[in-house]
Length: 136
Image (cartoon, rainbow, N blue to C red; front, side, top):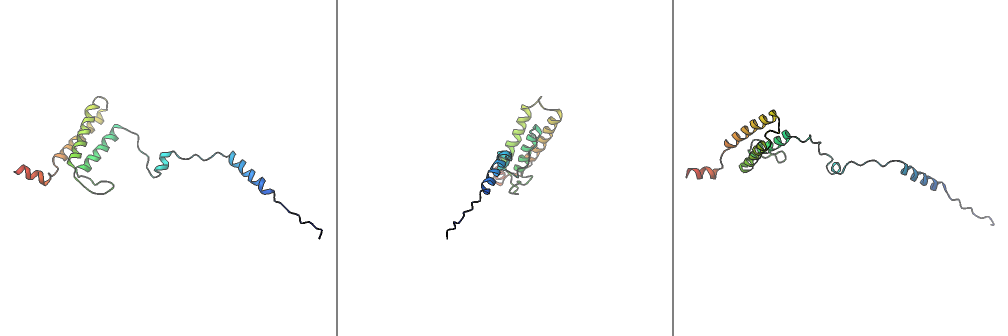
């Protein structure tokens, strides 16, 4: 029994690990999307900012406050006269402040929009408590 047992050590795995490390260092890491895209991956791209988009956004809010269209999230149709008046007045203020700095097409569009919103506002049904107070 003078035979010694030979221990065979597999040195090949060490060279394989070193090769994998070198390959990982040589490849460029994948660029991650910007932080805002990571936070909201389903957020659709927005159109470029413009005067027309701003006015139409405010007009859409005003139409919801006038009870002419449902809220996009809740689906509820609610009349909020104070909010509607505020939004209509805001559009009017923007029209005045931007006079001379917008195109004729934008000016006429805002004027038509304001006319429509104001007509819708004055034709809103009055709340029951206001109509009773007017009759007293």
